[in-house]
Amino acid sequence: MPDHKVASQEEWQAERDKLLAEEKKITHRGDELTKERQELPWVEVEKEYEFETKDGTRSLADLFDGRSQLMLYHFMFGPPYEAGCTVCSSIADNFNANAPHLNAGDVTVTLVSRAPLDRLLAFKERMGWDNLDWISTGDEFNRELGFLNTEEELKPFLESGQIPVTVDKMAELSGTDVKGYVTEGPGMSVYALDDGTVYRTYVTTARGLEGPAMGYYTLLDRTPKGRQEGGDEPIWIRRHDEY
Image (cartoon, rainbow, N blue to C red; front, side):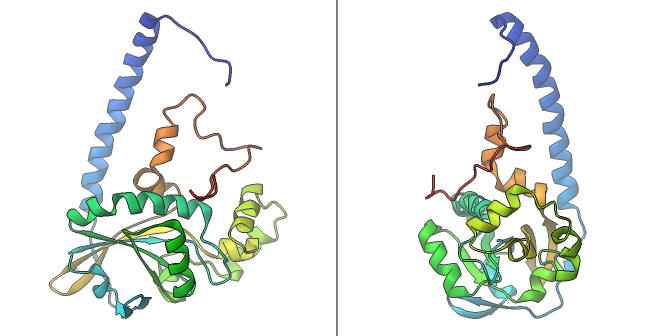
């Protein structure tokens, strides 16, 4: 445990009250951002994408499964992977726990990846994600959303000689090399189905996933040690059956 200031209860309360005022500012700003997010214009999805599912080939509209809203998590599990990305697996844990509540809020939640369907479904069974469907897609769908990188785009990173240790480790844990690992990108995309037409309403990636899909970070941020990441600290996240 790191060295830290120790205070009396009265001193602690005074500091806590100051911090609470700042936290409330963030909460209120979050409410404003939620309203702005919901007021974003919609974009009609005009292409006819096809997805391989346990129920056969389906269209994007089919994925709503009787609801009017669809949330897709673009899970990093590319064709060369032997197992799903470790961090994406932690995110899917959160989606799986929240799926029944989202379903009740008229939202269908689904994982989508480029690996073959049989490999995705086998990993889903291993992880026990009973509340989620997982579908396989071709390159085009993820590429158009910015969640699939080309070799040319990756070349400066791969040839930089400065691959972070975390990336090396994540690639190893996924059973692929660095190039195979970073070809994929994580993300969330959200859709609305209105009068038979599908609209894309929201897309986020990277740290935009922390708030909605990585609840353990929010909890760790409230602890003295925090996330225990950065610098030379080893990556600690594992799939939930590997701790």
